[in-house]
Length: 375
Image (cartoon, rainbow, N blue to C red; front, side, top):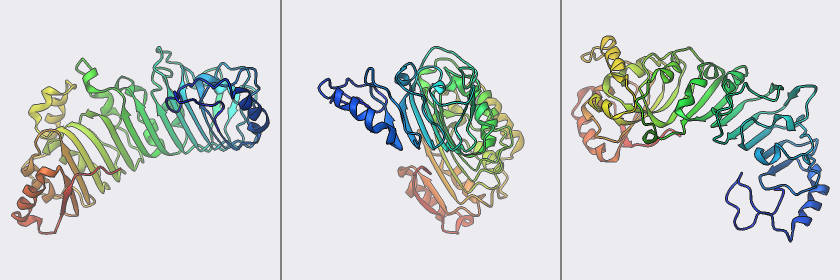
């Protein structure tokens, strides 16, 4: 149930709509009489004026426009004891934790399992989480989704790293990746990381150091997806328990792919979307230090080596904006004895099949199909 009638101009979830004055009183009465009995509720549209908004003590699921609720004195403190899923959109600066029932200065969501927070692009507040001089406790939290929090908080992900999470979904601007840190990766089994800023809007050459640090600490994460930007290929990779990896990179040359797979002994499926497989195209990326990664790979791996680099990888998907390098793909497949599926861009399927048939080391019937993402 929403709190006011949305007319035909209502844009989308989280965007305020103009209430229809002819039916406002009806909704005010409905809120007063029925809201307190609802176990699931939405508060996306403007709230009626001078109407007490009181949620049920048995509320389990709540979606709300934080911008509308934060300063509305007619909204009674929201019960938290039975709440299992909370989604707050349009958070303007600090999330409105002060609008929830608390004991002293502590807000304890005893049963909350899923938390979703979507922030505005506000001025850089960079406050300590959660703000309002409150203590926030979420002992049952398992699923966390955060969108664009870098403007509001400086340590949000450090705070949530104290919990053992099942899944974490992070969307931030690349300039805020430094606040993510490795600790949150040590606290979850599944993570999806999305950059919100397109490369065309990043006007200066960037260092890959912050991104590389995400991989430089041991963690038990098993499934990882990185999207939204052509990232550098990871160099030092200590996420050794990874089973599934989906990554968008700028340059995926043979040596870089070998290095990646060699460091992930349990990896069974790998999906790479890249700008190019040619190192010479590094000049067209936003990163200024890719040459260092290439030199590191050259020191560690001899391109003439033919020994197996993984006995776990069964599925490999590779898509590139520029031309696919088929000979390196064949050489890579020769070093993956358990490979069963290979996905490539449609125009290269027949050519690769011919090369595979002509390569005696590849007589194990690898299925070559059109590229498709893991998720």
